Image (cartoon, rainbow, N blue to C red; front, side, top):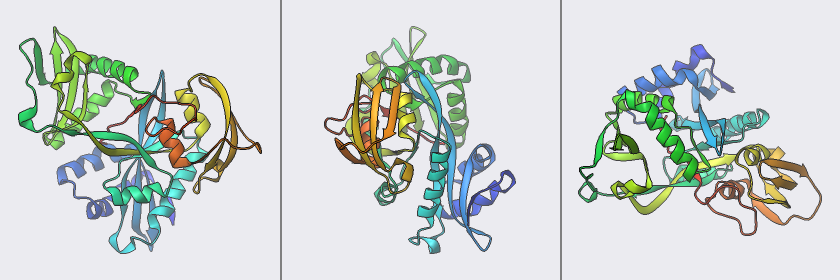
Length: 333
């Protein structure tokens, strides 16, 4: 039976979590004691035993000038003896249908490898963000005397948030909301993971930051004048996957460029409400979407449409939504 765990049952998830993931005890303790209570956990049970689980972590995302809540799908796990039996497919159909009923705009996840990415692709997910490979330590440039690099303190978080939010708005159409609370929670987690937030300061002004775990930058944002300090290479690999749940809501949040209309036929094998032919009229965030019998100009899967909307892989002729590579969600927990 698939269901969501009640608040007083959530810690029962620890056993399957520890069997499926190789996280340290310190990290697992932190997640179970500090994060889990705020999340939803969908499970499949057999004879009272949890055989599969998916964690849904609420996240605040900035889309243009607007903020919305979406779910980060995390902790996807199935007991080994139940794998390749459709357990995870059933849980995903359950949670995605739930999101559709609740009019969620979209959801996202970070696959652990390409084998899992293929599974998620069958459920309508596609890559929407790449992650840059990193320079070796000896190739990283040291700051000059006028540019200070130091560990961020809690007193830095308000102005760090101002810098980050401004940079996100300028460079991306969709990003995690980088407010003071974001950096506080990240700092708490980094204390467990033996990581740190580094900031670049010039003339008492924050001009960049980097979040580091195990000598790897899991997030780096630098202003234009500080780009020479980057740890990142131009080489990239696929990183985050997303899936549109409610197309009209997603388009209204981000806004479309210009004015116009088109007819599109969407194939979505998981959410029947998305499956069909629609006429879409748009003027920035004013979006009208209705079923139609008119001839379709575009035929796409929900995954292809997700990639187009978030600017990852554009469909020739289809009006643009996000700028190219306009999706930036470099998530942890």
